[in-house]
Image (cartoon, rainbow, N blue to C red; front, side):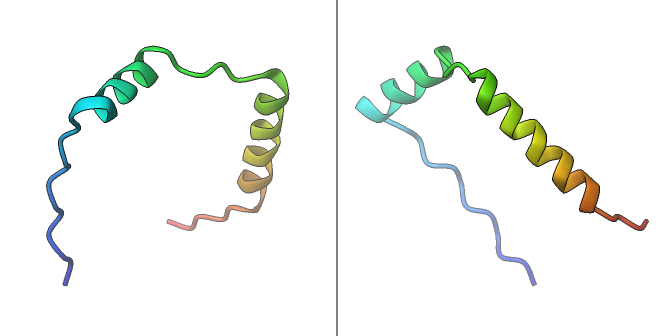
Length: 52
């Protein structure tokens, strides 16, 4: 039987400020990182076999 999901904790102080800044200013992804992610996605897609 599944366990109940706990409530998400609320952030306060410096943790809250860092989180808000990270949401408002996302990190830029380089072309090399994007290419690596595309290759990884294609590899996983090629081996995935979902039978419904």
